Structures are given as structure tokens and as C-alpha cells.
Length: 335
Image (cartoon, rainbow, N blue to C red; front, side):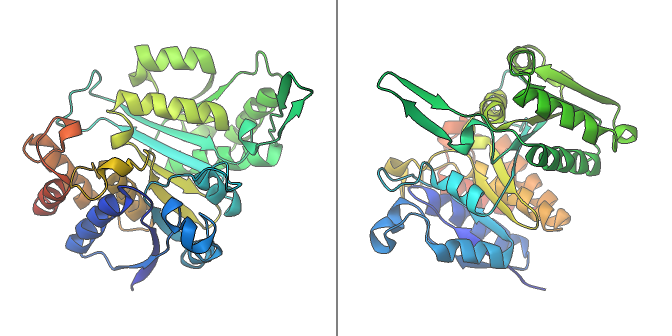
């Protein structure tokens, strides 16, 4: 049965990288129909907003979306279009897998980490104000409800993936009420899953940063409040090759938005120079989410085969290929 998926091409290289996904999925034969919805800077002049209501309606209707990179225009009232999407759709979990891929010149060869980042609260709630002329104040918001749902999703998905070690990251030694609540609720939820995991523990965020640089192989799954998750997910992306290879997903109750985490790089748009890997890996995770596990694995096989050959890797990955050549190499290696 054909499944309709909302496709937001995005700005800059967005069309280049999402066209790569469309070509690979067509070659896989996955029964997906794309419903294109325009958002971002390039639609601003026509619609008067970077996030038209019809985009939100499309995602709510189709339940699954794939998004290219978006540029946030200046002076529109949106702190970030990406953040606005998460808030409007209550996509409370940002899921960032980090996996070492073949063919890349990396310091670490055995990274396999997943970060579950709470996506709607913490300092990113945007509750801040000026205090007189010489100070500003931002309010850190952590709720039991928000914490419980991200922790439960992390435990459920980690268990289903066969993961055995899960760590909550916090700064509860200093922020005893907010981060203390996040840590406490994590352990309360953990009681329901303690038989499914070999190790359930916690780390203070600064120590966690050091641990990930020195011995990342010791860690498996991390659950983080919004700010720490944002920082650590980019750190982990650095362990596996940078933002150009980093897929992302924003998950809510019955809704999912998959996206690369890099920027829109407008100066490379339409030049056959964009690296579509992060978007392709996001689409691969989307196929898994939708129940197309076999096609997702075939896509992963094609990606890894293309990466092993420098003639079919893009230039930023140490190769010589353009966007189209890299995409064609993946298609040729689907198995």
C-alpha cells in the first residue's frame, strides 16, 4: 500500500540532497509517494512566513516527513524554523544516531552511539528577558511530564534495537532542582526496563564530554536535556566525520520528521557539489521507522559500498565525485 510522505526540500542545497533521496528510494522500489511542501527562506517572499500552515497540515496528515536543510530568515519572529516545527508539532524527541562508516579517514573506527535529546524544554523553551540595562535572564524549564516521555521513548527504542547500556546526562550536582528532576525521573522510568539492560547509569555533562573524546566505545545510548543533547550530539557527529554524515530525527506521538542536521550551504546549491549523505542516512532511518527494514538495510549497503571507493565519494569525504555520481554509485550498489 502506497504511503504518502511529506517532503520539505528546504533551502540552498536542500533540493540537491532531497533529489538524491528520491532517486535512491525510487531505485529501491519502496512504495512511497512524496507530497512536496515548501518552507524556509525561499518561500518567505511568496507566503510571508518561512513556515506556512499548509506545511504543518501536511505533516499532521501524513504522519511522516523528510526535510532538507532550512535557513532561518532574519526578522520574521522565528528564532529557528526547525525549532518552530518541533514546537508546533510537539516533536519532543530529537534522535541522533552516530555510526562509524567505511572509507572515511576517522580517528575512531568503532563508534555506534545514539543520543535521545529532549526537544521542547530546558533553556530552549525561549523564556528569557532583559533585566534592566546591563543583564539578561533565561529560565530553564524541566517538567516531570516532558522528562518522562523522552526517557520512556529512549528506553523503548533502545530495547527494541537490542541496546544494553543507557546513560542519562545531567548537571544535577549544581542544578539540583532542574537537572536533579531530569535525573530522578530517568531512574524512576528505568525501573520498568531494568531487566532489559545490562547497565543503566548517569554522567555529569562535563565529564561525559571528556569520556566521549577519550573512550567513546564505552557508551551506547545517552538521554539528555535539550541543551546538553544539542552540544553532545554535535560532539558525537565529530567522532564519525562531522555534520555532513549526521542524520537526525524528531519524534512525537504518532508524528516523525527526519532531517540532516547540517546547514543549507546556499553557495553550493545546484552545482553538483553537495554531500547528500546526512539526508540519505536520515531517509534510511525513516524507512526503518515506517517498517521498511529490508529496504533500509539495502540502502545502508549501497551507501557503505559507495563510500569505500574514493572515486564515488564526494570531495568533502575525501573523494572526487559530485552529488549525482555519489547517488548513482549508491543506486548501483543496492543489494
